[in-house]
Image (tube, rainbow, N blue to C red):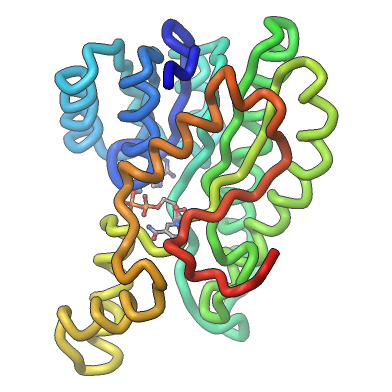
Length: 259
Ligand code: NAP
């Protein structure tokens, strides 16, 4: 299917690795000019080269922390009027809420709620004027099925989800949609870190830790960031203009509920 977005411009946050990279690659494959951001220059430039080689699309890099005002300024200076915005940042650390102070909560809220809202605020009115916009927020399956040790993530991402539920109904009349993509367990660097944590905490091998996690997924495997990117590209397509305010799970069937 031709997604009808060739020639559009996209900002993809936190995109040198993992899910963000998957989204940038899929959008570029559709002929979208992508501006990708991450904090570490080496992997960012490598990913930009990989995307250019694989797709032939224009790729611009912005080495920036999107959770800072300066980082967002740099990103928007590079791509001031995007048609597509993919919001993403690193996830908060796990832990026990008794150990978290106000600064821990503010950091999680800043990264996973206020940063996407700020980037939407800075770009959505231009999209409305141009009568085309697609915004995708990478959140987490934890929004629908909270993970107890990820309380910072459960809380901050739920705040974003509530805000988006309202805004998405205001912008859709202008052909500007806003949806959330909820990853289950994907095989990215973040998973490597989580597996390493389980190895150290439980005294098991990496293979055992991976097998235990895999066993929680009805698909019997981890997600591939490429699959995530393809779903993101569909949400950004011309055809998806009637789909807004949704929380789309991509988790290999892990969420057990009917709805
Ligand atoms: P990942 O493989 O570790 O990649 C994270 C990417 O984000 C890297 O490119 C990283 O580059 C960049 N990044 C992190 N913080 C940034 C910041 N402040 N500013 C700019 N770039 C930043 O992680 P992932 O698995 O793709 O996860 C992406 C998001 O999905 C996270 O919020 C994660 O919690 C959430 N999630 C992931 C899964 C999963 O299974 N993978 C499941 C549920 C939710 P630099 O470090 O160089 O900046």
